Length: 217
Ligand code: FPP
Image 1 (spheres, protein in one colour):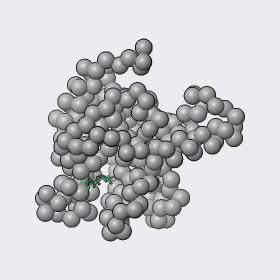
Image 2 (cartoon, helix red, strand yellow):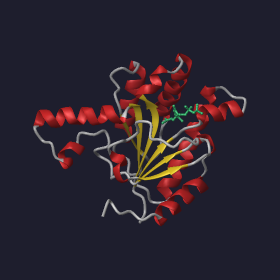
Image 3 (cartoon, helix red, strand yellow):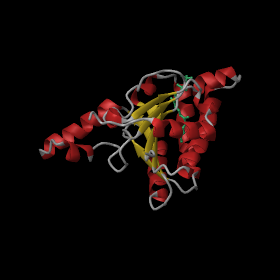
């Protein structure tokens, strides 16, 4: 069975930068280059959607210069992206700086008719908050069954999540796609995110094909 939708927790950018004598801001710029490589390879291998954890609701507690660096990388990406992916975002944009929120809206609009893979960017995102948000809407509509509940999650327009990959050596989900993770196959790599290559994607997909998915049966 091949994977339709992969989630990546792109951990290790800061450590990679330090190890290379670079600033954390440069680490995120290299992280974006790795994301381009990884996403392109996923598309070549037939993956339909990739979701990435670019900024969690908890990341807002980081030093201001680091937050500014991530915001800057993401805004520039949004304003300059001219590839074939359909870019979409999930998260709470209401507290983001206007320029960043506008750039999110603009890249989503510009790429909505693209026919390439979906690149879904979790930004100012938290899995628990996403579930609570969906629960509130479902409650208001009186529709508490799985099918209708799921359509209010940030991932509602995406295929079911098949795999979650976390780089950087930690083995936890850190509030990423908690509802969608229910039957996802988990992969943890020691490698730092900016070091990810096309070959890593190939071996992850080969590893996925070897797993037996039972869905509790
Ligand atoms: C965690 O690694 C990663 C982040 C907080 C953000 C990652 C963001 C990018 C790579 C930019 C992606 C760009 C777009 C357009 C989606 P960390 O830096 O906390 O790693 P550390 O544990 O080594 O400090």
